[in-house]
Amino acid sequence: MATDASYAAQLLHRGDGDGEWCNLGAAYAAVKVLRPQGHSIIMYSGPDGHPHQRIIFAYPILPGDAFERLDGSTLSWTESGSGNEFALCFLDEAACAAFCGAISPVTAALAALDGVAERLAGLRVAEAEGAAAAGGDIAGRLAQLSIGRRQ
Image 1 (cartoon, rainbow, N blue to C red):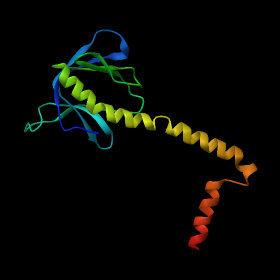
Image 2 (image 1 turned 90 degrees about the horizontal axis):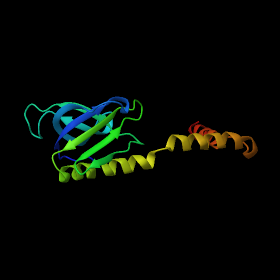
Image 3 (image 1 turned 180 degrees about the vertical axis):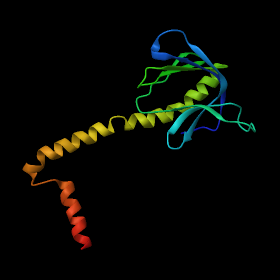
Image 4 (image 1 turned 180 degrees about the horizontal axis):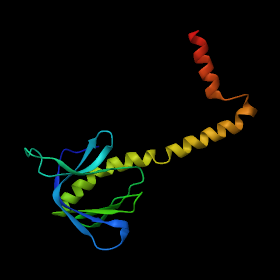
């Protein structure tokens, strides 16, 4: 679920979990749906309704992403592929809690999808192994029935 609310925050970055945090600047953070990325954390250059507002940072929320509140007003996460760490430091605990509330439904929905590809691949392997004993591939037979009906 995306939210229309945005919250003032500092964006921090640390590469590969080593070294010091680098402050990338202050902006307005929100959870929005971007195409084609889907639900994303975005940082705007100005508040909602600002005439020159533009996106300065976008992070697509993916299955397996884990967001952690470091303290009352700081939210952090690690990019799964690169190991880069990011953090959002909000002005107060209420803003951080509201932002976390916007992320929670997104991560819950993605967690339900996490591992679907592996489960489908496992079903395909089981189908292939059992195809000879069961008299063939059921998906193939259904496709033949469908093709046969059209002729």
